[in-house]
Image 1 (cartoon, one colour):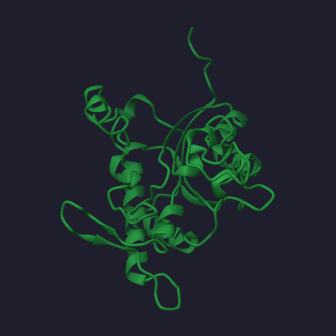
Image 2: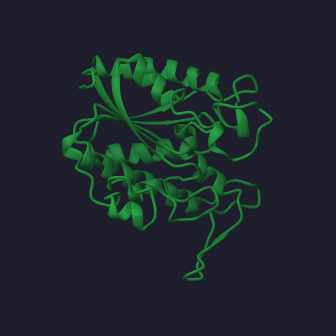
Image 3: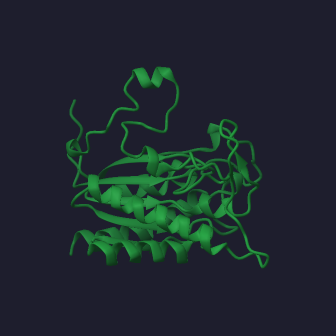
Amino acid sequence: MPDEEKNYKFEFIGDSITSGEGIIGAKAEEDWISMWFSAINSYAAKTSEALNAEYRIISQSGWGVLTSWDNNPHANVPEYYDKVCGLLTGEKNKALGAFKENDFDSWQPDVVIVNLGTNDGGAFASPEWKDEVTGEIHKQRLNEDSSFNKEDLKAFETAAENFLIKLRKYNKKAHIIWVYGMLGMSMMPAIYRAVDTYIRGTGDKKVSVFQLPNTTNDTVGSRSHPGILSHENAAKELTVYIKELLER
């Protein structure tokens, strides 16, 4: 039977938060297992349900805009965004067509929600990553006073700006919202700068930044990730913001 026609189409792009890691499970649980993940209780699902929207998600735990949490530059979502299911690996998935170019024209979202930057921030506090093939070392550096190295922070901002350019290429009419804040605010200034640079350079007025409520001791889930209460809080605020955008 055909699915019921929804009012809108939403696309969510993110990391472990958008993948629903930690929503299910007690706070003390730290095992990295699928049991603690929940797609139907995430802010993405709840926001879409509240606004009667069909939604799609591309997300991967630990990945970022520029690097993963452990400084791996190959573990960035933007690089794989234009493939059918580019985050998968292996010959079997290749044979199934996962790495083919996605037909974006066949499904155009009204809103694209990007929730990336948490793992890029974590990379600054993580050990360096060595490419076993090339021998190259990758590291987002901290200064002696624990502030972010300006050169490395700029690299993140450039990666974020370039991702916005790619998103607009494939989603020509969508509102693009960069959301952030459910696990701290360390990268928010850099995100604001990247979005501002993109807007000033392109004149694109349908791009914005929205701060999500931070996870607290009362709303945290397992694996120190946002729990169901945190996702509910995020969905409530994001729903109001998206509704206002769509009704303008």
